[in-house]
Image (cartoon, rainbow, N blue to C red; front, side):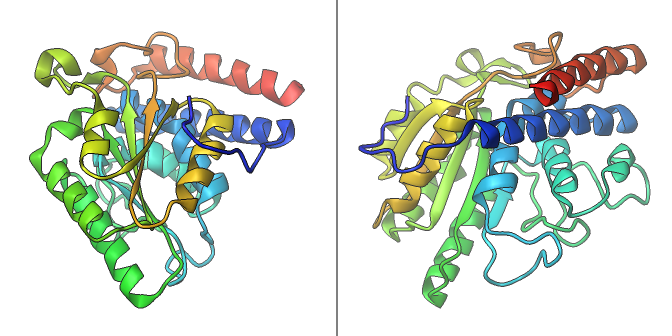
Length: 291
């Protein structure tokens, strides 16, 4: 589905498997964190687990040992409620211990319900109020461009978040200032807290709207690492305008009883559900590692 004129990179099967294994571990971390918190947002964290994995294990120029190094790429989680997915990716990438994930939302824990750049290593912007993260990312991108930095900025939005007016103001800003160092990513899983997007507030064609606002657009399977590599590589080569990658995803991806179920937008698994989900993911992991 990638609308790129040419394919420069071809991911090897070994690299694809490495990412699939990492994504499975990220999903396990999502369940572990939300179960430990007895709260949180697993559905959208799971739908975005593959892109979290691709960003932190492939795309971003980062160093877990130097999380604030000036030349790093930046990532802004505009849909900040899916912090469990971001935290799991950061932990599995080495920014902090995986064993800390069960402390999510606990009093005194540095891993609170929304990302906090002051307490969590690897978090570049504190987010939570929907619609605002993309504005922050635009400011970062413009600042880096004025400094002559080669660093890029990526921001991940939920599709329900696209109903916020501030998103579209920010995208106009991005196009006006020709922020070709900005990558806007949309997790299009079709569900938000109150139900299907189209019933809550119809979005129409997100790719068409993005193009109308001056962005270069790719629309791909958000669970396909081969497609991600092609889209992210092509986006990096676009000059003079920002790019957007629309990911077609499944809410709750990877855990059978959560997939496509709006009720798992903001509900933590109980002990039985946690055990069932972890058993499924453990089986997936074992199968991947055996091949």
